[in-house]
Amino acid sequence: MISRLPHAEPVSEIVQDHPVAKRNLSKRCAPRKVTVQPSVSTHAAAPVNVAPSPTVKLLPLPPPAPSSSHKPSATSAHHSTHKPSPSPPPPSSPPPAPSPSPTSSSGLGGLFSGEETGGQFTFYNTGLGACGITNNDNDLIAAASQHLFDIYPGATANPNNNPICGKKVKLTYQGNSVAVTITDRCVACAQKDLDLSPAAFLKLAPFALGRLSGGTWEWCNGDEC
Image (cartoon, rainbow, N blue to C red; front, top):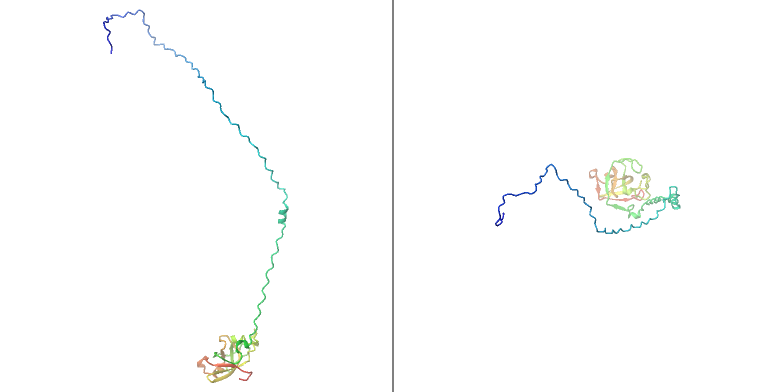
């Protein structure tokens, strides 16, 4: 906003006492060289504390290992020449058990003397018996049980030599009696059973009965029954 001057006279012409210089557009101002001086710090550098380096202490080196030509100690040599202790001798075999002695007749409660009860009577087909004697069905003979035959006093491993062979016994069944000679051994009989020849069985009962129970028998005194 232009303010007006009071009472100003109008200017009809501006008189220029000096000519106005014209600008040469073809010339430009040369750039001014500016030299920049580095700034100098007035502050002194602060001192730096440097710690002293630690002292290194060298340890002594270990002694060198022994060479391979080192001789073994006396202890090593002792173990290498040590002889093993001898093994203990094998235990001796135990002594053989004593063979049982034949049982006496008195120890069997009169089994080889007096009258016996409780046994059964049967019959079989005769032939060569354990005593080494060959019989036939008409002979009055009997086979004693193996339990009686094997424990008879004086019996050995050879049945032919058994003292029971040739012994006589008397059998009684329901009032009938017969005397027979022991010439054989019965493996299927009980201890007091007697297996008779067919002829001896018929003296007591018919064959149809097959097995007789409730009879008795006794040892004879030699040939006397």
